[in-house]
Amino acid sequence: MKTLGVYIHIPFCVRKCVYCDFLSFPAEREIQKRYIDALKREIEENAVRYRDYTVKTIFFGGGTPSILPENDIKYIINALKVYYNISPDAEVTLEANPKTAGYEKFLALIDAGVNRLSLGLQSADNDELKLLGRIHTYEDFLKSYEEARKAGFGNINIDLISAVPSQTVKSWENTLKKAAQLSPEHISAYSLIVEENTPLGDRSSDFPPLPDEEDERLMYHRTKSILEKEGYRRYEISNYAKKGFESRHNIIYWQRGAAHTHDYAGFGLGASSTVGASRWKNTNDINKYIMSDGRDDIKEEYETLPQDDLMEEFMFLGLRMTCGISTDEFFQTFGKKAEDVYKDVLYKWTKQGFMEQSGGYIRLTDQGLDFANMVFADFIL
Image (cartoon, rainbow, N blue to C red; front, side):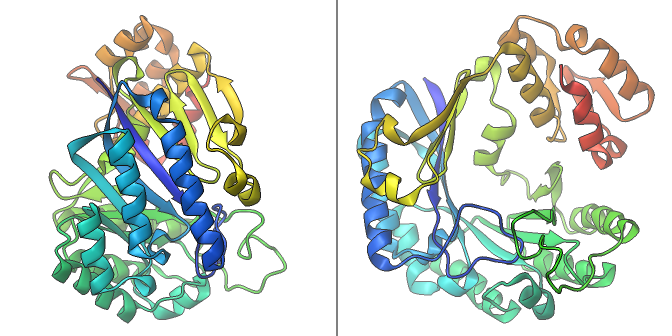
């Protein structure tokens, strides 16, 4: 059977962070209840589309999924179990804000079937957290992390963000070391992207300056050296894990596999799906979503991707992984050799020391990973 990654979007949060451009907002409990019912309808009505799939991963993202009562999460997981073929060893991840989850909730989430927790720390500096608009302190995070361990979570990711306003290289190093010393199984360390239509992206907003380009580059390099010293292997540009704890759900996005047999289905407001060469996303309109029958009336932006687009995605998403892309899988998927399709591009970047090819894989070197976006641009056919 083909494999499927399932994404469940929970758009609700206590308060939007100043850098957040995700589809999220505060909502009263009545709206949350109606949304969960609509989610169940969508899951049920689309089951026939995925009857030939085995669900390998489930990811609750947001927003802040942990803002919901744990029974809501259990309700959704049970709906998936009824209508879909869930692998016995499926990875089930839930994103949590430290201020919205404690010991009793963690126990209930484990009972519901969640086996991987992603805790949003972002920074170990309380001044930086306040500037980012986070609702928690570092002390709140520590308490939440300890209670998650006590409840029984054996697979925890910590999210971090570098290059935030007023941050120094030293404070970022301190955040990295504090996170690593807790010994989570996984650490995601992203560099802040200032998005338009956010308080941070509003030029009239009064925020301290961002780190300069030199300090941001130094933070990037210190991330790799500090985390690798602490026993974490970088397996993707911004993601580090202990052996065997790589995010299986995210890998489905980055490496969809031979003949794109690893597809993903998004349920909930604004969620995207890709099945074979077909792609679509759900409406961003909460009222339309809640009132829907869970069928195609909420689906928008349908497109069938041409082969050139699929090849491009195969390359620039797969090359985010440090293992690179498999030339055999490229040939099995497209009936063409990557070495032929991208001959000039591969020659250019290999000659400059940004790419290498060995063991049936094409990958970026450490230097190439530093300038990945520049390299990726060349794979647009």
